[in-house]
Figure 1 (cartoon, helix red, strand yellow):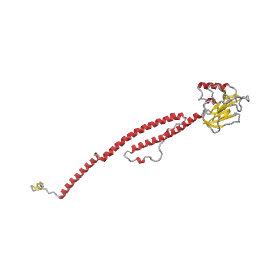
Figure 2 (spheres, rainbow, N blue to C red; figure 1 turned 30 degrees about the horizontal axis):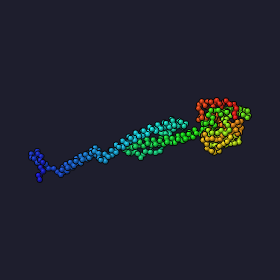
Figure 3 (cartoon, one colour; figure 1 turned 90 degrees about the horizontal axis):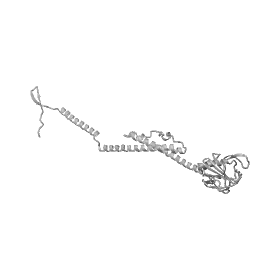
Figure 4 (cartoon, rainbow, N blue to C red; figure 1 turned 180 degrees about the vertical axis):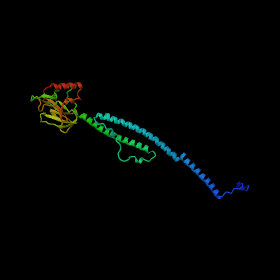
Length: 324
C-alpha cells in the first residue's frame, strides 16, 4: 500500500525544504468544514426538491383540487341557470298569475329576505377554499328559500284557482226558466205598479210568465236554505250560493228540493205556479248580493249574446206593472 506523500515548504530562515506538520486541531477543523459543507449542500438539495418536485401524494392532491375547481364551475353555471328560471317564475307569478286572481304580488323583501342568527357558515372557515365554499352555500341557501316562497305562492294560487272555479260555478249565470226567444219577460227590476195595491212600488226581481208546471232551474251551485210555503211569495225556494250571493224563486206550484240540500246550476228546483200574492202563473226571480237585491238581468251572461242582452233590457223596461 503506497504511503501518503508528505508535503514540504521552503523555510527561508534555514534555506531548506522542511515537511509540513498538520496538527490534530487543524485536521479536525478541516474535516468539520468539509462535513458541514456536505450537510448544508444536502439540506439545500432536499429543500429545493421538496418545493420543486411533487410527491405522489402532492400530485394526487393537485388532481383532486383541479377536479374540485372544475366541478365548482359546473355548479356555478347550474346555479345561474336555476336562478334565472326562478326569476322568470317569480315575474310570471307576480305580473300574470296573481294579477288574474286579484291577489297581492309578493314583495322583493319577502322573496329575498336574508338569514338571521349566528354565522351560518362558521364550519366552512379556515379551509384552503373557504371563500368558494361559503359563496356556493350562500347561493344555495338563498335559492332554496326563494323556491320555498314560490312554492307557497303556488299553493295559494292553487287555492285561488279552486275558489275561482267554485265561484264561477256558484254565481247565478243563467235564466231560471227556458226562455230562448225572450218572450217570457213580464216585468223587470225597478219601480212598478203593484197589481193588487195599484201603487208604485219597488219590484225587486224579474217576472217570467209561463204555464203552471213549467220547470224552474237553479241558476248556480249552492245550498237550499229555505222552502217557505206561507208568505206573500207563496211557495218559494231560497238558494245560498256563497260568495255573498242568494237567489229567490217565488210563487211556485211544486217544490222538488228540501232545506239543506246541495244543488247545482241547471238542477230542477220545482215548477211555475200562482201561489201567494200573484195575479197569474209566473216565476218571480230575485238575485241578492251581499244582502242587497240587485237586477237579475245582469246575471244571465251564460245564456245571452250581447244582442240578446240588449233586447232583454228593453223588454224588461217596457212593462210598468208587475205580476206580484
